[in-house]
Length: 146
Image (tube, rainbow, N blue to C red; front, side, top):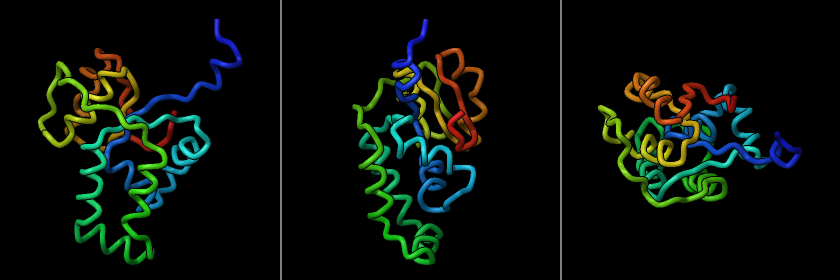
């Protein structure tokens, strides 16, 4: 039986880098609900140091720098959002299923290790939906927190 306290527990999620870019670089309208859920604490974002390093690297890509410049948004501001909202965890052990894109494996591993939702738009991750469900991971290809 659930209690009022249970209803207030934050939902734990893993967000891949493209979702983070949607939240704070591209200002994607579909990301508004997820961003608000992070800001209000109803979503707990699980991440690792390697995920932060990837975000920092991606923020230096020319197409991302151009977008940041257009918005007068320093990359450090995006990293500050990561630091403010992400709860850092150690790298997770390798999940039983491997992604064809090695850069995406860390997101899968963390989501599987904690049995939490994974938000990703990456085709190499999305094609693993049924396998991830067997590991207790709900794969959400959009940025809404549902």
